[in-house]
Length: 461
Image (cartoon, rainbow, N blue to C red; front, side):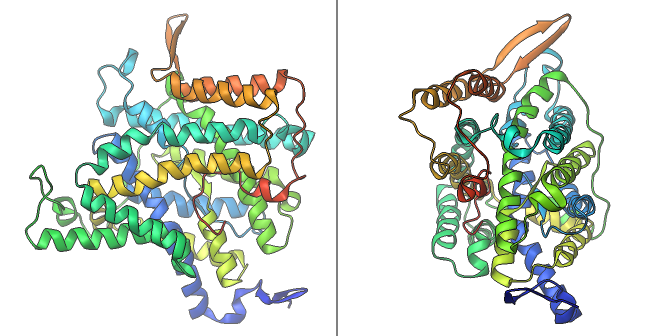
């Protein structure tokens, strides 16, 4: 049995040689790597929907189940973990604030299933891209989605959420600054595993500071309690996740579907990064079309039953680099742990008690970093802005993505349809890139740039 990669004796491809106890610990390490970012998504969405948002239990359940499903679709060969996608946060925020047409008299909780329905359609778009790539080839397809299009779109995703970060942080700027500082410190100066989990450390350490302040009798500047453990105290120790069935509406679909452009490129970047880390070309075997199908169906499955979109996690790619254990079965152990943890309502209640200011402090840097990663996407792919063609495409995307704050509403028959700013920007960018002459982008010509095409903030990706 070949347990190490040829030419690289320090790498382990079959973790069974380490024994069961070490395998279990390695699985926990992958769980910790994804945990902070994965649960932060439902926490943020819950703030947009004023307490009627996504469930942490459902999120963890479908992170685990989606990962196992992805492994099945990719022939059990790709050591990737699927966690919650940050890219759809702007879409959730937009749906929560829809106040026209059928959404005018809805509560926030009634709007949420429609946001999930939009994500189901976004996930199915992965299948369309996978089919096209299978028959046309990845290089031809990527000419329509070059970094000059995807980079500015990612910039818009981050900047559109900036106001939300400030609104949450101002509940208690001291706590927000602690959370912000911890994320920065671990992201820049962290060593080993700690460098890979800056968000988790930001949550844990600032939560600890908030608990000390709460026990000392301190309160927020507005007089409210720093931490409220009411939900955690009343929650049972064991219980089923709060699943629900999504609903479909054309306006919500048009909010969410264009975001798939960014997340599909994130998937391509993550597959490139994992391939480079492991030393195997997963884009060729089992094939990018198979991994896209796994990611897209996992996303649609999650959203159909009330979970967030899934995406391959750069954080867990960092763990591969750290541990040098490339056995996909270890990732599947982490997926099983996530499913088990999803049946712990009291644990979820403790996470929901996280002070709003901490959420603001972490999202303060998170949203800015999403936009900065869009810039990195452009820089590392050497997009030439002395070329008028590229300048025009980026300019139109940025103005459309940030300028149409209320979107563009029109009526088709008797149905009112709203195109959000991101949808308008995406359509305009893709069309301009297809029409304007001089498109010289070729996927694979710059492997380093191709690796950094998503919205993961992990520094070791």
